[in-house]
Image (tube, one colour):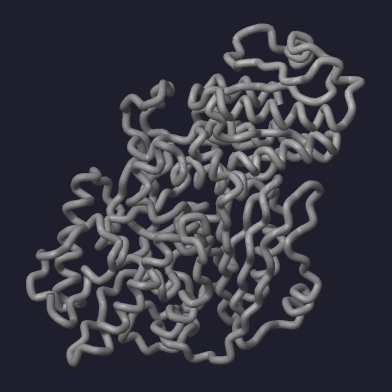
Length: 510
């Protein structure tokens, strides 16, 4: 724990205190020397042990831990406790620290044995992010089309082999097609979820759902997909959409939780995340509205915040894009619920009008049907998805070039879903990141860039400013309200910052 504390203090996002508790017969000075610390570690050190700790009774030791935490909480404004390998600690210590932390309302982050170096990215998080460590839940949804069930085996194996450290593995919902090949059925019969992990927390479960119709339209397919999951607590439960053609890196959950905690729950992220719809794990190969290949933006020469070094121009960089992801993308719970409400109103609008618009064909047929509707919402609200792109190469999720069925993508397209259509452009299969740690992969020594410093792309893939995006979103929303929402005055009573879907639809007058 000493290296973790020193590293966290080095980033100066938190006031770091190290408290020595229990029966350890070692001085703080000896502890620092044993861990190679000889200065330069800006941690506040405290000895919370009672006198004669080695020979004290368990009751006295338990009381001492209890009282030490009470004093720390009162005097130091305790926000979160980080402990290491509680499985090997004395029972009195585990019992007292968990009981007192719970009564004080302070979260405990329990690091598994030997995981400190792998989880060094957590030292870059502020206390706002760390307080949410145990609260966030991720639910995975996989929609399998006919002909993709074989790819599902590869995806589930990569999910099982991923490292979830001490976090509870996500729940998994798999929507199966009417016809499933025998090897896939046999694999599912023996597939154990969640995977067993020493010291890990059991959580998510595997849910299998099987469709019985081959000829669902785009509307029916979208409704069925959106009905797959409703988060009970949208502020803490988020949805990870995975294509069965995806294969995940063993480190995908490290990056996903790191980026989620930083950009959604940190004191900085809380201020800017209202326009962030989610976090993607892979780079798309094509534009969402065409079959043209997509080239990610590069860094432009400029200084960055928080004392980071200035990167060289023309280097790879993460970026924000108005185009939502569908292969491997996490959607925030609040945005997912908003999307469900939007789709419900969108379909009502289509069926209630005598002359319904056929829709603005937003996505090419390689993408799932719901992407067209999600694109409409993103463009009307000015929402953005964060995409990873690192100079070191490698990916947390790669999409294999398996055959992709044609998917009708909008209301008015009655082509049965799915029907056969070849790929418009070969997908770029980026090698997976396998053996390393996040701080070695990511630039700036693992410190994630602030969202205000990364490029922003319009839906069409053009680089724009935040202010231009807001102007374009307002214009798109005005056109949408007029053509689809049937608002008489398209620009009246509309707030782009609102999450109330009702302001996009005026079927009963304004």
